[in-house]
Image (cartoon, rainbow, N blue to C red):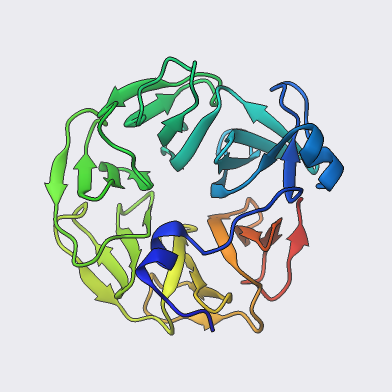
Length: 287
């Protein structure tokens, strides 16, 4: 079992995707092929994936990384838009991209980014608020607005004005149910739940501590246990099932219901991108 520390939770895992793990060509219009040392030396290696999800409109897998935003299709990566270290990334119920982090020099974006949005699939970003002030390492969006953490938990109904909220422990990951608006946070003291957009919190009983967590729908939750197993609840956290074997070091996680009704979990595990349709018992490699 991986020992849990605050540093482990706040970084989403101790390891990074090293050189040659996931590689992408520097030109934004050219996709990357299979991971390899040759590809990483010729292009830009993705050193860390901060978030993984699907675009709800297109179904394309999105990787928010230290080197910018990438689309993953047919085992090929294409970088989209400017190079921004996307520390925080989420997609709103309406399909807008929200992000925070550190832009590269020459992008004409503030450092830190604050909260920025893209309405063109990540091709361009506009700062909504807190530019030059906040680096949100985790953020999530739902029906009540945005909830984010930059050393202080903050909530916003419009992405422009913010309220301070108290939380018992700093969150490593935040996720919002798109129907009910219930927020979950992983912390070093366990998973916390809020039904009032972060105003109050109560603990959730789980089989083990989790580093990452995501709602797949309003009753289905998927989390990454600190021992590398996936934990799944289909009753909003009342009971849990655990995958048979550890998958490895999980550094990014996203979940959603497919059109067929399956719970799809997207994962970055030990330098690979995989998905699972059975709670982590089997996986398919995407990259």
